[in-house]
Image (cartoon, rainbow, N blue to C red; front, side, top):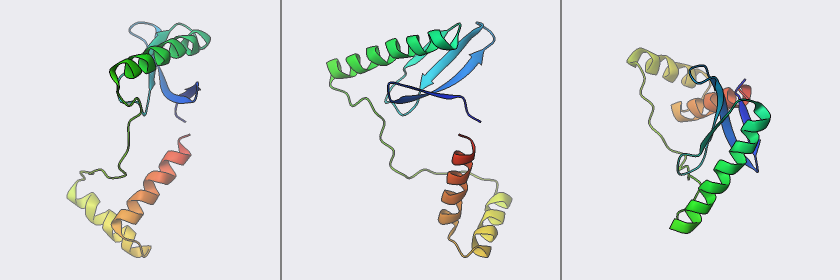
Length: 113
């Protein structure tokens, strides 16, 4: 299960950083870095709100779109043997490799939430 929290409608990935002994959050889906740190989850949410507010204010000031746009396309590099195995699995299900990979990614993303 992923460590994702939602703050003011924006999702952030959270991890514990043992080097500094703090929780670290990083908003995903934004055009720039908006990370935040705290000792507790309660404080992490408060710091996340501050970071997000600062980020949106800066974007507004500079006329930058704050949210990242996803095209729906990306390249995947595989070991040739894995590529061949995936192509065979897709064919066995009567799907194109693209359809098969898209389904596998969607299934894995849903399972990790």
